[in-house]
Amino acid sequence: MLRGKVMRVQLLTHTPDPEQVAAAAARLCYSDSSIDQLLGQGSDQVARLLGKIVEIGHFSVLEHVSFTFGVEGISRACSHQLVRHRIASFSQQSQRYVSHHAPFVAVTPSSIEVLPELADRYQQHLQETHRLYSDLLAAGVPAEDARFVLPNAAATKLVMTMNARELHHFFSLRCCRRAQWEIRAMAEQMLKLAIDRAPLLFAKAGPGCVRGSCPEGSMTCGAAAEVRREYAERVDQNGSGDTP
Image 1 (cartoon, rainbow, N blue to C red):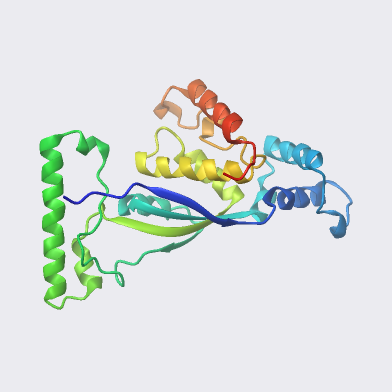
Image 2: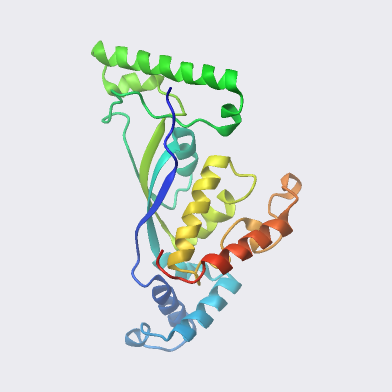
C-alpha cells in the first residue's frame, strides 16, 4: 500500500535579529536618527516600537525581514495552491529530473482514510498508476512525459522564502478555518516557527478575524470569537521567543 509521509515543516534560516531589523526600519521612519543609530535599540524600545507598528498596520517595514522554510510530505494539490502566493520564492523537487522508480509517496486525505472500502480502492488506483508510470519509463518514455500520469496526490517537497509582511498575508488566508485542510496545517506549523523566532512581529498573525471582523462575509465559519481565543492562547504559549 502506498502511504504518504507525515507533513514536515522546518525553518531553515531567517534574517538575523529579525525584530531588531524591522524596528530599525521603523525607527528611521518615525525619528531623525542617523543610520548608525538605528540598530542596537534596547529590548523595551524594540517591543514598544514593533507593538505600535503591528497595531497600526505599518507592515512595509516587515519586508526587510525574510524567513526560509523547508517543507516535505505535502501533495501536489497543496503545492499548486502555495505557488499562487507570488511574493515569495520557491524551489520545488522536479518530477522531470527526479523519477519515481520506487513506489511514489502519496498523500491520503483523512476523509478517504475513514472509508475502508474506498480507501482500499484509492490505494489500488495509486498502485496501478505507479505500475503504468514504471512501464512508461521502462519503455524509454522520458520521465518528463511519464510524469503526466502522476496524480495530485503525489507527495512533493520544496524550499520557500517569504518576507514577514507576505507571511502575515499568507497566514491571514491559509490559517483560516475555511482554507483547504492541508495548506492550513502547513501554515499553522509555519506560524508556530515564526512566532518562536520573532514573537513581536507575529503576535497578531493568523486568520483575518484575529485582527478584525471576519473577511469571509456570508461564507464565514461563524466561530470568529473562538478562533481569536485560540490564537491568543497560542501566542501566550509560544511567544517567548526562546529557540525550541
